[in-house]
Image (cartoon, rainbow, N blue to C red; front, side, top):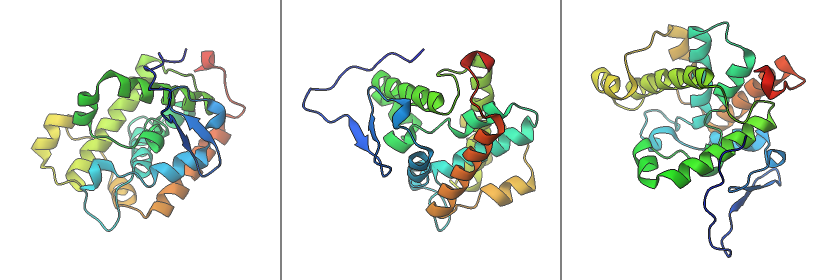
Length: 216
């Protein structure tokens, strides 16, 4: 079931965005048919995490973050279903349209922002063969990996002391040296874009044809 539609803007307002693929995505009533992985990867590779306040020659992009989240999940839950890994890669996909707003600002904006974000994510899920809304246990698994990734980003890139990071993201996660080496040096936008596209397409091939929502 699609989430509740947010309140409509004035009739004269434009509520869609033109994508480089040529698709026109309506933010209030997004159609899965207007969603392309090329647009998602292009956009997320150019959206900065932490408002750009990270070390390195490049921004730490949302595209790289989503790959880090999936890598954390693979280390902590190596047997997790491939569809859950895909959902982890797509958990921040709405930000290719609405950007990455820091959590305090989301709280200020309140319900309408969350409604738009939720409807976009539901449409993205449907586009790639996932249920519009994931079961609570799978959502919790993805959120745990997201928090662990945020802890690593905060302490390795964004200037947080470990105790400060603990207050916001929980205790330090277990992680391998390979995870730090492979995912915590910010990549150029083109690299992040290509790697996200490649990983999503790999996971899609692993469970094609797309399962029904009742199968997940």
